[in-house]
Image 1 (tube, rainbow, N blue to C red):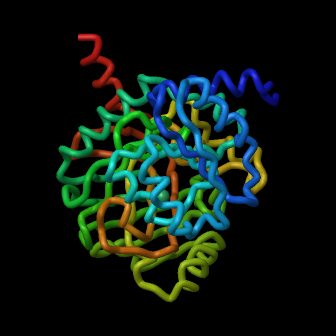
Image 2 (cartoon, rainbow, N blue to C red):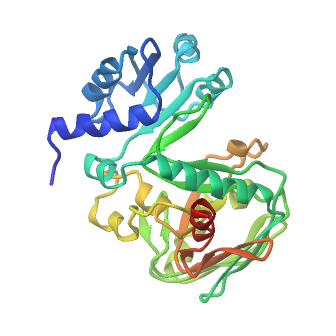
Length: 334
Ligand SMILES: [Fe+2]
């Protein structure tokens, strides 16, 4: 069911209010000139209703911003990114307090996964728990037995709105993550049937077994899905593509594992798959987002079902179900 423009405006007001758009703030709506977003009009009008001054900027490409745009972005209080700009210089703006909110998903997903203030509470609690941990241990009945020493990189989270100075987010995902200490992750990761691989936007049909040593995947075995993954990664001819990237777990109670199957490729950005509650989000490639030096354009996000995730031997996810959240809710109610 499609949304009316009035319903869409109500959703945007909700998220922009959570993002603390204030009268007099400078909001920049950023898009590519050939972008297919349905949100150009609402992205301009709704911050104006909240009293912000809005600029609309179209750039030629997602991958590289013209130099002349950068001062405008640096001066912004909030950038609404309708294109998911990949130019890393945009993130430098955040050092001076600019908030960034990416909005790509189709309206019905924005509505179903509409962020709430308590999503932030849960995400921050999970992030603080993750930040205290020295090691993450992940297991599954499929055969995963993976260790990641932690502490070298910060714990980070996404909760669907951009309210704090310098915060980057995407409506509507809610999840928490960090990066393993450089060259220290080890063990076996079995990507099982039904786990999702981005950017392929496919559900795995045949298990893929990964052997991880000193922070890098050193063996990929299985049937068709393993062959495809191997071929995709090999074409980069770069050992960094085999490194372990961010690891964490999904916190969105309205994210749906099965939703991606209802869309053609390109129709969804995959926030359902990345954020559905209790997934273990495994990934490969760069660690620059966490402050590391490893940069490679080959990046696989792999939300895995039915895993158990332990932080210093304490479970936060058991067989795909969040357990830590119960502790958070219990302490909130106490
Ligand atoms: Fe990722």
